[in-house]
Length: 240
Image (cartoon, rainbow, N blue to C red):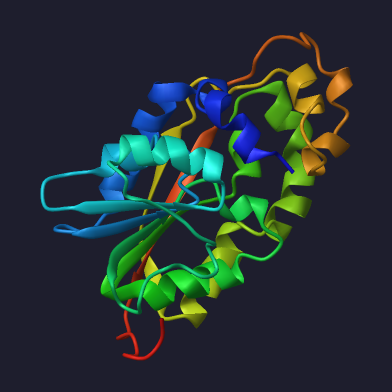
């Protein structure tokens, strides 16, 4: 597991920087409800996306477990950065108009507790906005990588914690219904076969990446999928 405290100073530059954050924030904005006043960015990291969601009349709060990441987020958000766990957010029920979670669910073994917690803090009509199918995002075509991964993608994709079908089912169990979908490009994040071989263990590592030509040529930038789920039921008045 990556040490996010140690990586905080170089994290953004190593992952597409400002250009990637611009793309992500524009995609989130397309799915946010009109007039959303309280937005909680869960797993916000350095706050590079969070800060782009600020608007007059809208409060954006970054939540992350890493103190190193939060130090950078606090600087960007004027102190509106809180250390907390995605499964136990420091909010009372029904206080948020939107919970945003970009590039988080794929890191988990089970996305259920995070989806449940988002549902708890959302008001009726509020939305959970999250990326899904992150591993699949690198397999944009046409490319030799996409061709190589086609059969494994069908086998492994539905098993991921952030698989679209899984997240949709988890959301439905908590009174969250599909409310929109969009995509955005992970600018600067296309990797070469050699770089992919150096990633932490995952099903992409099972592919014969060494057999691909041009081992140091970066393949197309990933295309991420972002989905929104709207809360249809009121939140109970009890709780944190």
